[in-house]
Every structure is written in structure tokens, then in C-alpha cells.
Image (cartoon, rainbow, N blue to C red; front, side, top):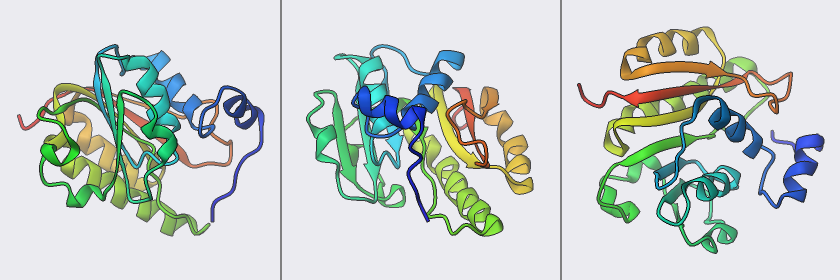
Length: 199
């Protein structure tokens, strides 16, 4: 059950040639917490339709790069960007960094990934948590020690408990509900800085 919100942010995204209004969530997150820098190498998990990839691509510049993976078909519009590579892959099927065309772990991992929603709150929250747990499980394979991280979470008691357990994974953890998030939405973002890796 997905629907487009045709509001100020929708129109702004269209005008500024972004693929989705969600770009303004990442923009606010980055302005507040500085997770993306020039020359960074970024992994965007569940990138589709690609506005986060577009934004990251602009920030990291020609010496940086963005790799996007999603189970949906590759969005060809992103392939036109020189510092972007996108793959049709499931994170669970990626066993080596070489499969993503890179040798070293990423400086930043971002994810605006969401489950297919049903409108049933408990089901959607549980599905969101499964995705979040899966990403955290794989994170040491992709994110370098000291790297930054941002992921979308649907709020629930389980989510809050999980977040408390993960605070030790980073030097700092912050939570934010960006202004462009719909008021009825239960989503918020976890921003982790200074990944501790497998300490």
C-alpha cells in the first residue's frame, strides 16, 4: 500500500529534478549531523527510486562514489551519473565487496529502505524491524571502522529496545524525524557516527 504525497516537497523534488521527495529527509539529516563529505565512498541500501543516491552523488563529488543496491530493477536514470553504480541485488546475496565493484569498505552506509506496507501497524513495524536488523547484521561487512550510518526505522517498542542495544556500535547515535516526513508517519531515522566495527 504505497501512495505519493503531492505536497510542497513533492513539487520541490520535481522542480529540482530529484527522483523522490525523500531527498529532503537526507538533506536535513546531513545538514544537522554531517554524515556525508566530499570524496566519501557511499553505499545506499534499497536505493530505489534513487533520490538519496542523487543527493549523495552531488555531495561526494567526482573523487567520491555511490553504490546503490535494490531488489528492484536498476533505475537507468542513475546510471547516467559518473560517480554512481547501481545493482539489482539483495543485501543477503552480497558475499564480497568485489561483487559491488569495490575493494575497500565504505565510508558511509545509508538506507531509506522500507517494507511493502500493509496498513496494519503491527505488521509494518515488525517488517521494518526485520529489515533494520538485517542491515545491522551485515554492517560490519560494508562499513569501515569510524564510518557513518543512517537508516529508516518504523517506531515501536521493539525498535526502541533494539536502538538502545545498538548504541554501543557507534561513538554517537542520534534519532531524527525530518520535517518532510508526513505527520502521520511512524518513521524516523537513526544516525550513527564513528562506527566501532568488530571491536
